[in-house]
Length: 253
Image (cartoon, rainbow, N blue to C red; front, side, top):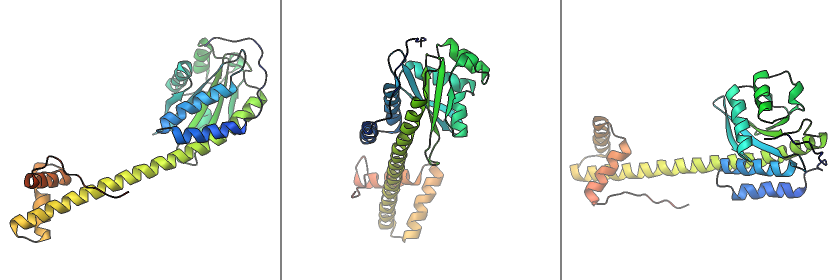
C-alpha cells in the first residue's frame, strides 16, 4: 500500500442498492467464506474514492483466536494477518469491545505501538474497524485501511456503520441457513446409519434364527472386537449377503 495525497470527495449514505447487493450476495454465495469475501470487496468499492483507495478485510474470532477469513485484495489480507500476528491492534480491540474504532493518523497514535509502527511501514496511515453484530452466533469485524491520514471522514464512519448493520443482518441469515443445513445433514446421516444397522440386525436374525436383542448383541460384539464403527460392521454384513459394493439408504426431502 502506498500513501495517497489527493483530496477525496465525501461519500453519501449507502443507497438502497447496497442492501439489495447484500441480499443478492446471500442468494449467490455458496458458503460463509464466499459471502465475506464479496462483502469485503463491496465495502472497499463503496468507500474508495479519487486518491484514496480503501482496502477491506474481515476477521473472525474462532476458539478465541482471530483469523483473517476474507479480504478485498492481497494488501488487506496481509494487513489483517499482520495484526493477528501481533495479537493486538485497533481491529482486534474493536472486535473484542464490540465498538467502532477509528485511528485517524497512525503517525500520532500511541496505542498498540509495535503493530502501529509496522502497519505504518506498510503504507497505512488510518484505520477504521467496525464490529459485525452477529447476535452471539459468532464474532467478526470489518477492517478498513487507508494510505491517507484522516482517510475516513465522519460521513464515511456513518456510512460503514449502516453498511455493517445491513451486512450483519445478511450474515446472520447465512449462519442460520448453514446451521439448518448442517442439522439436516446430521439427521440424514443418522437415519441412514440406523437403517443400515436395522437391515443388518434383520439379516442376522434370519441367518441365526434368533431374536432382535440377540442379533443386535452379535453386531455390537463384532464392532467392539474389530474396533470398527457399528454402522461399518452392519454395512459389511449387508454387502456380504446382497453382493453389492455399497449400501445406500434413500429418504424423501
